[in-house]
Length: 126
Image (cartoon, rainbow, N blue to C red):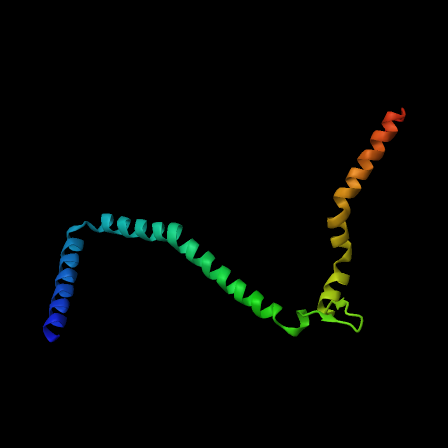
């Protein structure tokens, strides 16, 4: 086993030596361009997806942890009706106007358009 390890070590040292010699043959400005391009390619093609994947996994874990808390768990009353937790009630009450508008805005627009059309049909132009 000692011989196999020493052969691997020798091979690694020879590989390092060859890399070092080839690198020294490349002019400094071309070497810097190669390094810059390699780093740029890595940043563009590999780093961004890695960061996105890391961010996604961190967010998933954070959301799992948050929504596992008792504040988000619904309960049931004595009539077997589901009761929203206080935190959900608070969020709903604080955002009712925006939620209402988001839910019914399209329906309101359709209704107004239908009323305009009916008025036009009976000769009233708005």
